Image 1 (cartoon, rainbow over the protein chains, first blue to last red):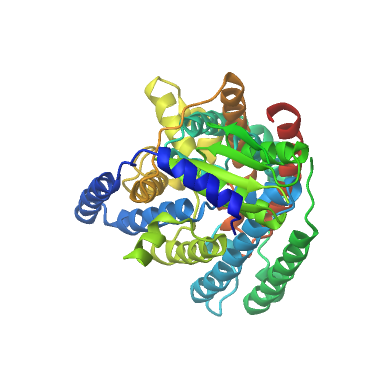
Image 2 (image 1 turned 90 degrees about the vertical axis):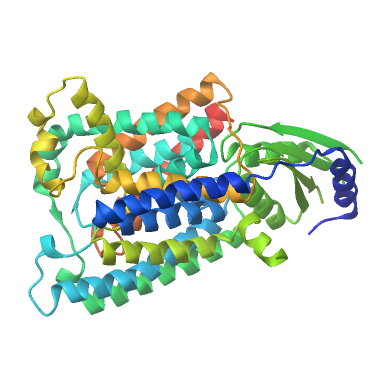
Length: 229
Length: 74
Length: 172
C-alpha cells in the first residue's frame, strides 16, 4: 500500500542514493567456511553434522522471517499485535505432533519412565514461574531473547554481543546460586509429564485443541488493536 | 503537507515503533513521517503496525542495511 | 530470477518462520536426540573461562548435580550447544549477506549498553532456575508435553508486561 505522496518522496530520495554494494560474494565465502567445517565434522565428529546443518537452517529462518520470541510476547501487551505469537503457536502445534510420534516410538506400550522420554521435561514449580518472569523482563529490556540475540549477532549488532556477555554472566550467577534454589524450592517439585495422567494420544490431542484455542484467542485480540502508550 | 524526519538509527526493537507512534500522534492528517532506521526488524514490524492502523506506508533501502520508512497519517 | 531475488531479499512472513522452526525442532529431536535449546551453551562458555583462570568448578553444587551432561568426548567448548549456536550465527550472517543488508550496528549510548548487559544478566539467571530459555523451557518444552513449558510461557507474559513498563518509562 503506497500513496502518491509517498511514491513522490521515494522517487526524490531514489536519485540521491548511491549504488549499493553487493554482498553476495561474502555470503558465498561464509557458506564455504561453513562447508569446510561440515566436512571436518563428517570426518571427525559425525554426531555434530546434523546439528551443524539444522543450526544453519535455524539461523537462516530466524533472520529471514525476523522471528523474535521477545516480540511474540511483548507486542501483545505493548502494541496489541499477535502476528508473531500466532506464528509461535503454529510452530508449537506442528512440533507437538512430531514430538508425540517420536515419544510414542520411544515409549512404545511400556510404562512411562520420564527419564527415558525424549524431549525437554523438567521439574515444575515456583522456580519455573520466577525464572520465567525474570527471563521475560530481561528479554524485553535487552531487546531480544536468546535465539534473537544469536540471530542479531549474525546481523552485525554490537549491542547483542554485549547482551551475550550479559547472558554468560547471568548463567554463571544462576549456576552459582543454584544450590539455594534446588535445596529450598526445586527439591520438593517433580517433572509433570502430561501423558502420565491421560496417556500420550489423548494428551497430544488435548494439547493441540488448547493451542488451536489460543490461536483463535490471539487472532481475536489482534483485531482489538490495544496499545500501552 | 509536512514531512517529519525521525532518526531511529542504532535503536533496538521496539523503540523505532514506539517513537513513530509518539510522533504520529502529534502530526496532522496528510503529513508524512520519514523514519530512518537500521534495525532489520523495523521493516517488518513497523510496516505491519502502520498497515494495521490504516496508514499508507512504504520503505526504501538507502544504504546496505539502512532504510527509510514513509508513513502517511490518515 | 525476479522471484528468486524476492526470496532472499524480502522478509518472509512470520507464520512461515513458525512452521519451519517447528519442523526443524522435530528434526533435531529425531536425528540428534535433543530438542532446540541454547542457553546452557552460554553457561559452558562462561565456565570454560572460569576454569581457565583457576576457579574450581567441581566444587560447585550445580556441576556436581549435572555432571552427566557430557557424552564421551564432549567438553565445555566442544559440545552440542556450541555447534548449534555458532551454526545459527553463521546462518543469520549468510542470510543477511545474501540480501546485501549487512551493516555493523554500533551501540548508541551508555543507557543502551547498560540495559543490554542488565537484560542479558536477567535472562541468563532466569534460564538457570527455570531450566531453559525461550527455546529449551518453552518452544521445546510444550511440544514435549511437559507442564513446565506451559508455566514458563504464561509467566513469560508477566515478565514481558513488567519489561514493557520499564521500557516505556526508562528507555524510550
